[in-house]
Length: 113
Length: 113
View 1: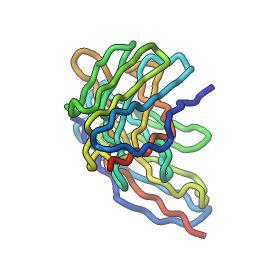
View 2: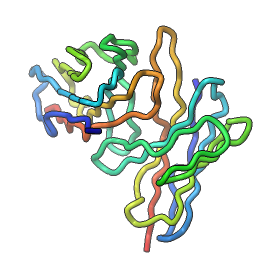
View 3: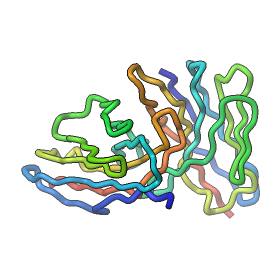
View 4: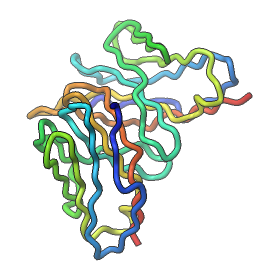
């Protein structure tokens, strides 16, 4: 089971870059790393997914070192609306099929003026 | 249409009641999920359906009974719940059970009295 560990909370200011790191020491060869964002009383929203090296989309970048035991979500120039909980997930394949998307404890990001 | 629709949005039920939560998606996704989320906690996986068959049951008590009538619909039947079952119940779907990009509904806020 590739359990994930993230900081419980982070604070930032508008316009700054925020980097949230997640450790997943027992990640399996076929597992992807996925990040979700969740606002209060809403369902999580997919941000980005990667397997190795670097992935970038219009919202964020994901950096994964060669050993894949950790990953870093980078949010450029955050705004107040980026205040949310960010979850790192590692997909876990199970016998008989199925991909368990298991959420870790998450990181509460607070962005201030 | 990239929406997952859950009904009802709010539900209050007594411990002897029987009720159902409904989830619908029209994205052609073949994997659907139920999660339970308590306040300030991460979502906990309950069930995964893959191609309309139950593929993962995370040892959920039998008072929760999932059903997948067709590829677009997912139900969660509730019976004889306890107050500690009060939570936000989230439904999600993904293209199939190998994909880690899932789309979540807004959830049903359940209160058991």
